[in-house]
Length: 80
Image 1 (cartoon, rainbow, N blue to C red):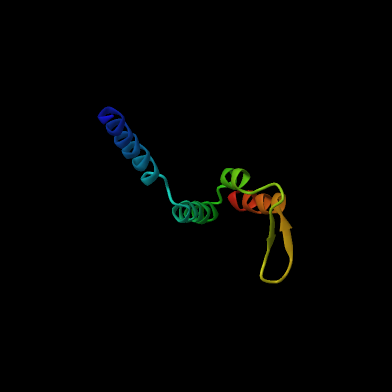
Image 2 (image 1 turned 135 degrees about the vertical axis):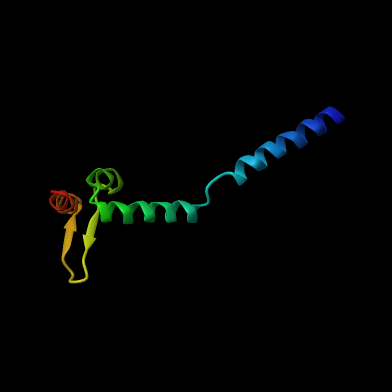
C-alpha cells in the first residue's frame, strides 16, 4: 500500500511539472505577434508563406481587401 501511495505521489509530481512547463496561450500569442512584427520589418516572405492561412484576407483602413497571395507578393516586392 505504501509503495502504491509513493508511486502515485511521484507520478502526480511528474504530471504537475509537465503542466507547469507548458507555454500558456497568452505567451504563444505574444511570441507569434513578435515574430509577425519582425517579419514585417524585415520583409520575411518565407515567414508569411508559412504563417498565413490559405483563406487569409487582409482588410486595410480604407476598406479594400487583399488575399494571401497579394500580401505575399507585396512583401516579395518590398524585399527586392
